[in-house]
Image 1 (cartoon, one colour):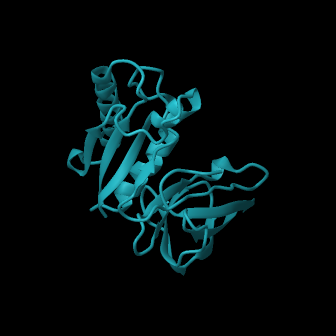
Image 2 (cartoon, helix red, strand yellow):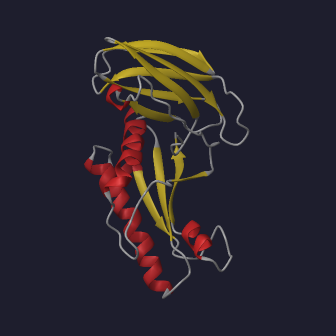
Amino acid sequence: MKNTFGILLFFSISSYAQEINVHGKVTQAISGKGVKSKIVYKSYPTGGISGTFYDSTFAFTIFGSSKYVITAEAPGHIPNAILVDPKEAKNNEINKSFEITPTGQTIRLDHLIFDMGKAILKPGSFDQLDDLVALMKMNTTMEIQLEGHTDNQGNANANLKLSQDRVEAVKKYLTAKGVSKGRVSTKAFGGTKPVSTANTEQARALNRRVEMRVMKD
């Protein structure tokens, strides 16, 4: 399973009674190669139990039903985080993946869901945004810019407004979860920066997106 921004973290969680064994690997999204990183795990939200690794792989054991957050930092890359919930286990295992993007590049928030022509976030968007909230709470100096894009169909001014409304909706969600407003800026482009110029519905779907740019880490 692939998540959004950051380090590619592959890990599985196997449960035996009260013990859950967590294993993971950090890789770079573009090359797929392992990246030596500072990897920290903490019980969430208290942070009372924690550990640190300096490698491209990690393994540790957690107990009970407490959630944990795992973060990874590597030079030249945007840090990333994920919440680990033992309740997600199926057949005593949870598999997830993350990609880390080199600093300065944009990260597509590709799990955000809006109705066509509207700016109301649907519940399917919340898991990815909750991961982003956890990341920003773990990295308290991190500042981001949310960038909104639409396809080029219809009125250009309406598209610009829609792209602005959507990034504002994302910002509102983040700040409602405790991220300071000053750490999240927004910018709207409407249909002026397509990733594909093909005249197909698939291309237009690719162009409708919200991206995140890390301004300060």
